[in-house]
Length: 114
Length: 115
Image (cartoon, rainbow over all chains, first blue to last red; front, side, top):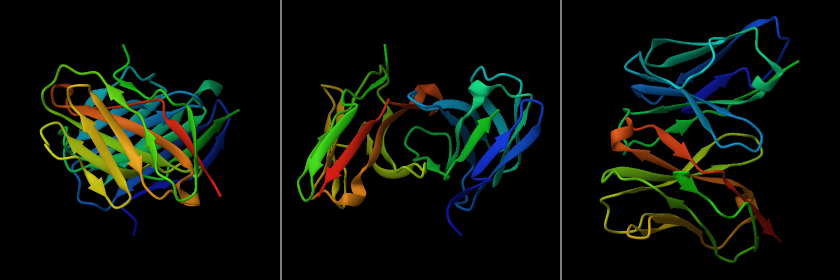
């Protein structure tokens, strides 16, 4: 099993749909992250969870709702998205939230909102 | 001001030659980490190399080395003996101790290796 997995890999949804992105890490890490990568923009940190508690919400619109039921799983619930939300959504994990800890990324979910 | 600056949007290198990808950073923290990631067209971000702010020696990982110049606040990635599979986007990132370890990424450099 690879370190960080994400499902689905590709998702097309309408603006009225509700969907969820799933991330799972098999590295025994305690911190998990959601990033958004839009075309021609740097990676944007969306949410940080450490020991299953949300420690960072980077001014993300409420149509994105994260959930971290345990240290191995992270979800991103999506509802009433906008076309500008189309992007690559990357999940990452690290041993802790400390600066010297490397973040390991999943393969990402490519989201297209029509 | 941007915290991570990658001034080379695109770079070309001949196969088997070495290439340097530039990265400068801005921080007032004494404790921070610097990272390089590779992102192929498939999208996955692959960790390459890490340099801690207190590390006195430059980090090396196989064909990757990090040229860390703390006074200049630069952390350039050197790839030796380039291979066709090295063609990808490369991101420099920083995590600061006082910023709860949150990562800041640069805009990336697209590297193309020519046969």
